[in-house]
Length: 460
Image (cartoon, rainbow, N blue to C red; front, side):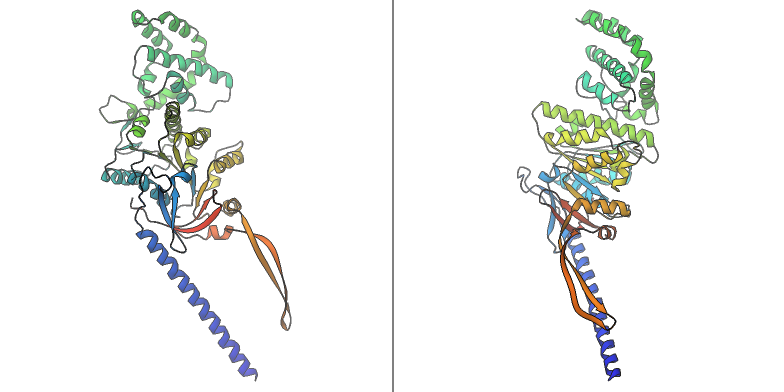
C-alpha cells in the first residue's frame, strides 16, 4: 500500500512538473509571437489634422493589441527610462520615426553623442523628403547660430543662463552689460551670432562702434551714456566674458562660424520648415562643453517657443532630450512647462531617476519630483537599482488584491486558512527589474492604466 502511495505521489509530481514546463514553454512562445508581431507592425500613419487619431505606434500588449502614444498624450510630455541595453533607444526611435512620417518638426538633443544614431535618423529623414541638419561636436556637422532670432533682452537671457550664479549682484551686473552689448549690435546692424558676440564683448570696441555709426543713430548719445555706466560692470563680469570667449575659441568654435560657407542651423527655421535638427553632444569626451552647449540649445528652444506663443501659434513640435541627465536643469523644466501651450511634445529619456539627481548637492529629490510631475506618460524599461524600481512601482500605484494564508500541521494541510483584502503593486519592483530587452511598462496617468508591452522595432 505504501509503495502504491509513493508511486502515485511520484507520478503526480511528474505530472505537475510537466504541466509547469508546458506552461513556461507556451508562455515563452506567446511572448516571442508578440515580439514578432511588434517587430512587424508598420508605422501608424494618420491624417495630421485628425488630432484624435494622430499617434506614434510604440508596440503591443500581451494580447497583441497596439499600444500608441497619442499626440495629445505626448503634448503632456513623456518620460522614458531604462538601463543600458533595455531597449530605451528603440522606444524613442519609434516616436522619431512617427514624427518623420507625419511631417512634424523634430529637435533631437542627444546627450550621449551617438553619431551613428544621428546618421541613421538623418538618412531616414532624407529618405522621406525631410530637411535634416546634424550638429555634431565630432564628425560632419552644420554650423549653429543660437542667436539668430529674438530681441536683445531675449538674446541676453540665452547667454546669462549658461552658468549658475551664486551671487545675484553679479548676475544683475552681467545682465545689464550683455543687454547693452546686444542693444548696440542691433542698433548698428551687426549680424548676431556667437562669433560676432565674442568680437564685441570689449567695452572700448562697443564705444568705438557707436562713434562710427553716430551719424545714422538717432539715439547715439543715449547708447554712449548707457555704455559709460557699464564701466564698473565690465570689471565685475570678466569671468563670464572669458567663458564666452573660451567657448568660441575651443576646438568646436568653428561650428558657430556662420561665414564658413556651411549650412547654418537655426531653430526657428527648423520649426517653420518642418525640419529635423539633431544635436550630437558627446558628454563623455566633452563633459563640461556638452553641458554648456546643451543649456545653450535649450535656452534657444525656450526663446523659439516664446516667439511662437507671442505670435499666437501652436505648431506640433517633437523634442527629444536623450540622456536627459547630462543637461538636466531648471531651463529644461521651463521649456517643458511653457512648451505645452506652444505645441511642444517633449520626450525625456535617461537611464534612471537616480541619474537625474547626479551632481545636485541641493534639492536633488525635489528636482526629480519636478521632472516626474511634469510628465503624464511613462515608458519604463528594465531597472537594475532596487531603489529606482521601488520608486517606479510606487509611481504606477497599487490595486486591490486578495491575500491568502493556509494552515498546515505536521500531518499536512488542515484545510483551514484566511482570505483578506490588501493592496498590491500593479507592477512589482521585481517585475521591473526582470523586464527583458524590448519589454516595458507603459503607464498613462490620464486613464491610470499600466500595460506591459513589447516594443516595436523601429526602422531607424
